[in-house]
Image (cartoon, rainbow, N blue to C red):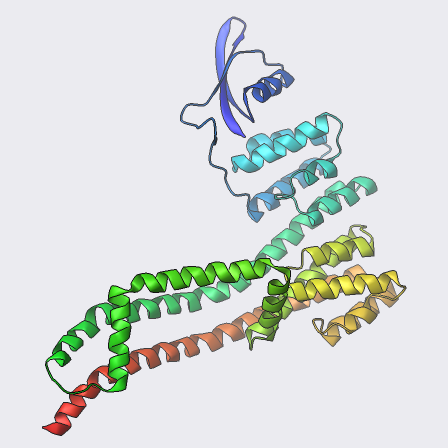
Length: 399
């Protein structure tokens, strides 16, 4: 999509404007759909005809805002095309606005809303499209959109909690790396120069620190290549089925962080399935969506194993109890929800409970990481200081 300028005549007066389109022909078609007969259409100055404008990333905030506004308009009785036209033109994110306009155009030529949304999987995921389809079929689109907005907001809040827990440790690690680099590049060379004229053999810790200092000063590119190479190697391994399975399994087994990953996975699974079931999506279809959006391969396998067991006539709680990822309390509450016919309500309660559990786990992780990182930094700096003063102590003993 790019921006095109156009000129047209209205009652003899020349008027100009802009429109988002794929090319000039597409721009002319869109203008004629709006009863505008352009005299001239051209690519907006300053834009590459090949690459077009830089695309903005569509965020969860954009989708939540769109869903909330869409819900209000539908509830007020406005036609879908009019709702989407207003939302597309008024979107702050121009990339997202263009997507909404394309959805509107598809509806205008006879498509329904859910199928039009499915044409943009990078913006509207399977969960979103299936819920919208359930709302269309059941005639409760406004209710579904409200649930969707609440779901996305709660999922976003859960992500923020986990990311927020990593901010302080990341800052400590950054400071630690900065301090060590400063010592290695500026402080250690001064000691090395002083020791070079002594003639005595240096202690092993001092030699080690001086070798690391030389690495920082003269062979830093080895460190950069190793770091970048390790990052891309892990990324490539994680992109494979087996690699992702092993890394996700390792994440769940980590001390302190492992239980947090498990609680986040359980909260996401129960929140997603509860929202889908409450909106009228069938259990098997809902479980399939949960599996594909789990974010952890171990959870995904557990969900798909459960689906196969349900197809063979079992209830949901039985196969879930055989998967180590789901705690016994969760399985018991799901069993109660099944037997009482209120599984969606029970899943929502489990999700709320585990949201609080994530808060507690995040606080525990932060409280443990802070002193651990400080001790680690102290040990590193302390080792460097002792290593540099060992030769001085030996010289004092000799004197």
